[in-house]
Image 1 (cartoon, one colour):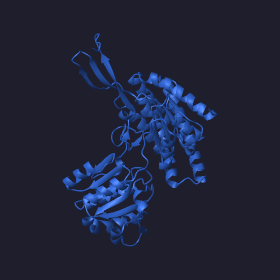
Image 2 (spheres, rainbow, N blue to C red):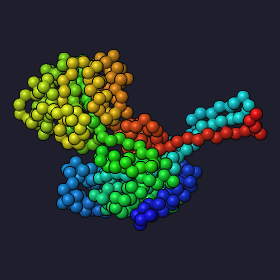
Image 3 (cartoon, rainbow, N blue to C red):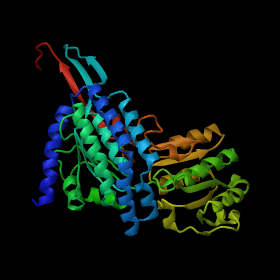
Image 4 (cartoon, one colour):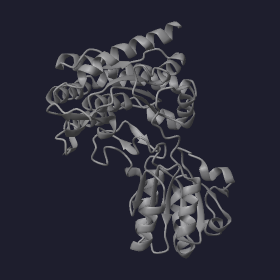
Length: 422
């Protein structure tokens, strides 16, 4: 075992010991620890921003993509939002100990199905230092220990955030090593963490498709994942076009670098002539490049960058001001396109036809499906879950935003009075 693998193994052993104690840590102790962490972020706001500025400067110097730099950046507003997110998690109902079901068998055995923590969770992520706070807070509130491994580009930011969380947690009475940050940028640490199945319940990778596939390739630990966010908005022929304009602009332009941003706009042929010419002008004004099928190009006009969509474009996550546009002949064609080319993340229909909306909601096979709303709402905070640990497009064991409940499992508690099996 090399030095990095030995270090990760030691972290796993300490995390497992902490997890066994965290499982029975009182709710109020966990809440107090999280509130103390949020207070610490606000008191250290200037230091967090200063450490992050060093990461950003190095990232720009090394040519990190603009979308990744945007995710990496922390300012005073984002630090405040990070603190608020942790407080929101602290205020949520504690899922640990919830009785999911209870019943008594004819032989008198009383059985309870009770929610319990997963144990130790590994988080491997890129760029966004707020993931350190969000993931740590969620894991701890759900009674899990966590091992966090952020990207090299955010090492100073992550170390500062995790240090504040550990200090606040220790003072509030959390078990030692409940939260640990991998401080080496050696890629061997990712491989070692992915194989730590003797201690970890699961790994959640957060980042680009390349990172997630690399984790899956090496993992012997279960991985909860989504490879990419190829999200769609479908403007039906019965859409309120003013509403469709606002939803589609928000889904593409409000924050194009994130996984719940729209990458493909589908427009019913019955609405294309009324919707696309004006909407294209709005997109061009915002610097959006369009990649369109022949039917759509007929309505997009001049004044912006438009090129023919290639087959590979329909499955591409751009994380930038680039948008695919396709005109479809029917609701069936829209649903088929999404189920073929989408990533099972977030998709929306804009329509006043209730029947069409219900079919879309039922037949689009994605984790989150919307009617008359932007895909940008796929987020634990926006769903009222506090923060989130990630978005899962898997089916086992979690799907969609992963928050407190998704960071638990269950066990059966059985009370008897001397029963034996015949």
